[in-house]
Image (cartoon, rainbow over all chains, first blue to last red; front, side, top):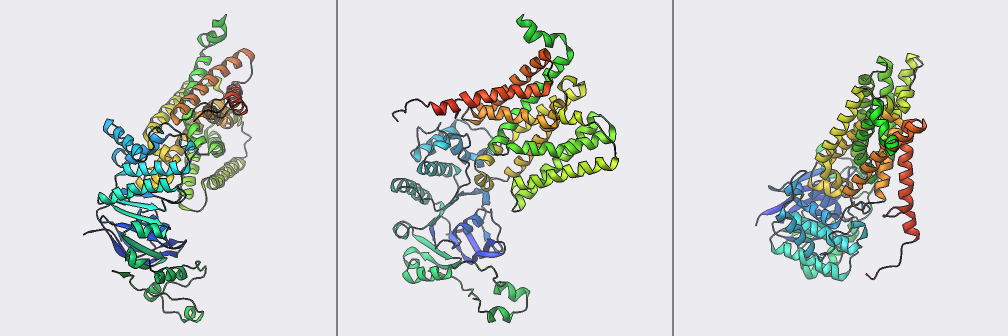
Length: 272
Length: 289
């Protein structure tokens, strides 16, 4: 087994405040991983780091021979301008970007693949509909069709089944399963723990710092979930410098400890 | 009779032929640019950018009189500097595009006014403010035509990334880094077209031949391509009809062109197929599915 993604002491965040803190570990090629954690746990931040739109504050992400642009990404709240005059077909065809770039033509084979992708998500007949006329579920189906066309080896889905009905999420999860069957690597941020237990072999429980990572059954234990909830408090405006960085760049400061601030453990997450 | 009204002015007078060529070339470039400005919710950016160009053109005018080259170069430089700084600040800091543009175009205006006041000359900037489509010389006409050509070619080159960047900037960022350069190239085209426009219509009305046709297009088309075609066509019609009205009635040609575009716009606003007011008031009975 080779690693598709390798996190090395990865810290991601905003304005120097970490949102994902000291993450170590590897996502095996072909793995189907649920990323679980309370709101604010850093799931979306981790995904932005993986696709390269957010630069690490420290540490790094190794993607092997993959370019970040070859990782397909479905953000939680896509910044789509729904009033833009474009139809479903053209929107889905954007998934061909890696093959066509700015200038490449879309030949008959490519057109057929667009139609197949639209059919796979059950939107046949919607090709000419303007995206402004789609419902939330149809929108999500369309975005999955675009993901299908992207034909990426690593696919990152940020809470893809929020705000869609059971039928739609079942249909769309079938596609995720298909990707898993095709040995693609899929990471999915999820809130529905029962669904994760039933469908995902591997889980990463995140609470800014990794709480546990491994087989789903051994990660989603009541103790781990409680730990995650406790660890995920609001971010401290006046947080001290991270002890790791302090040790290397500054003399140790007694003040932070005296003020009772939590100096976190930099343990390696439990993996089994 | 019809010939006298609709064709003779152009066959008999050279200045009318030149004006028509200039107006048509202007409409060809400005139509698609206006549509993208509108779709990106940047309709007023054209106006702000026109203000940014004005000082540059004025400085050119100040340094070498009513010289096409100096005024064009001044306008282009001022416009490019403002467009590039705006793009950079909007992409790298918390300031959004509108705020970044506002700061830089106001600075450009202030610098321009300062330079002019230092020189202490009382120059006639009416030409820059209102232009004169009836007095286009060969050079200016070539400049406008060249700008329209460049606009259409560059737009064809950046069309795909520009559209994706408009609809789904997040997706564009993850698949390619072409979105940023495409956006900057687009801003440069906006400047180029405004500089074209100010020779014919003046800096203030130049925005009109971009935005009015675009708004007209929005009322008739549901897809981008058709919208661009309709916008360009209505710009062409406004240019032709405006010149005719100006010729026969003696009103100033620039405002006449914009007013015709305005009349087309009001008609579209009322009767437009996509979201026109009459259509909204009387939508007809609902369908079965």
